[in-house]
Length: 220
Image 1 (cartoon, one colour):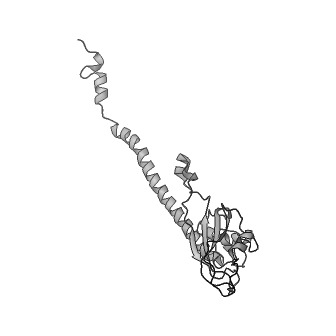
Image 2: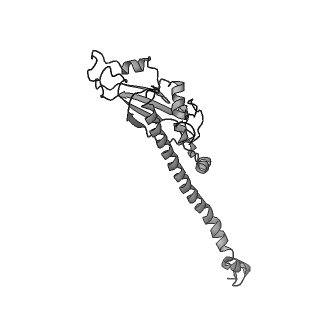
């Protein structure tokens, strides 16, 4: 049987299949996108953890501010009235240890008071007014968005729950468990967000709870 001339020893086809020039370039073209993708994912995951930590730190600050600030929901509303209604308990009696709570903000049925929420989010400037800016290191009192600049009032909710502490008629108000959390706040991932749409991934919930103090923005 006569073989085609193209496959004869030393023929053009044989030389083509044995030619190894440029093989490193081809391997590089195959490996480079994979390496870039791996490094990009590692960087973006680190960025995601950083944003998560920013949010947690902002929530810790927000909870601390909330326990020494006026309530963020109306004290004349039905939720707060139910929270502070102790029934037949007389002044000086222990607060009933019942599971009663009031909440407002993102994902809740009641909206928080606008100015109180702005104070929590943006902080206080050097003039003593609500800052309305996310500028870390500026002003008298930092706000939540000074730790995570993407946090806005529509992302935050606040809950007040009876703690079983204190007594009825306490001059500085009831002792409550105050919880601050976020809802609807997603990760900002420039590469993976554009590539596979991970920008829609919500930052994991990590609400922070602290026992209240005086619940007043003007107490000494």
